[in-house]
Figure 1: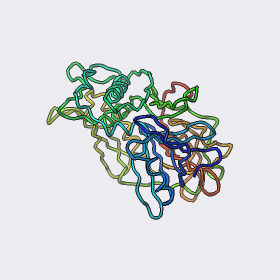
Figure 2: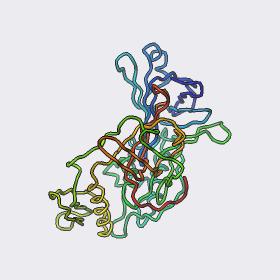
Figure 3: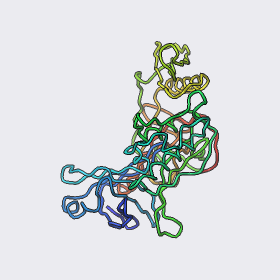
Figure 4: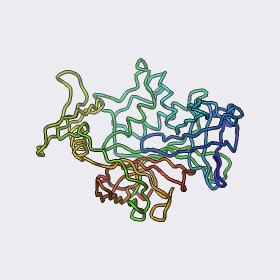
Length: 367
């Protein structure tokens, strides 16, 4: 439930009226994602649930976590249902709303189609269209970041065809899904005057995050328990076929393959929006290199220590990681792709951090 420096607030999504400044959630767990909305879960006891049902109306209620007078997470409540003796609450941050919206006019009501257009422009146009419709304005701000990642060609413009009833969330996420595409994450803060909540989609180019030499994740220091190490032949491949745009014999295809002394295993990467052969070849090689790595640790649980204070890292950061146990000895850089914080975990606050291999990236700054 809310600690001495923590409050859970809810607000009517349409009117902006505050519903409560102290929702008594137990088992709180929340955090952001890279190129996704991030989630929040918690529970109410039966007595409190009965009293609080009008404060958590799913699909029409904003929920915020405030720590030490600073909002650290915000989103929309989507689900509330009994779970044993408690009522379980599930919420997701701002881009989850786009998955409940569609282009009903076509071409985002005249904003498209797009030819040689910066992907970040289309990302902003999706939000502008969604929030221009009556009862659809969340007040979300989208960064003005520009990128070198273009979409659409004169021969094949990037379209939102009216008859397809395009899902806005799927298109938004797709614009950030690739090797040379922008990153995004959702953030929530008080405005400088603390009179309103600032809901934002942060866009990073060439990527979000920074290489952090001031932090570390280390077994026996701040990593709790032994992380699960996945050794999966199902995921392994040294041959990757990237399938791109087109139909039949005109369909684009590029293959990245090596011999590595192992049984040949193949994986098909379906990329129907990509037409350029060099882009397909790059994606195929990137996927092959990723799939040839066995035994990567995808998730760790860390406690609050001077080595890496909870809340001191950001989505996209690369952090030096050292894991040593019976099954593995790993030292290297890992990229943070998201996390959830459990402020009331037994023994003190903890965070479950999701990791990905930290490949060679260019960095646009320290945030």
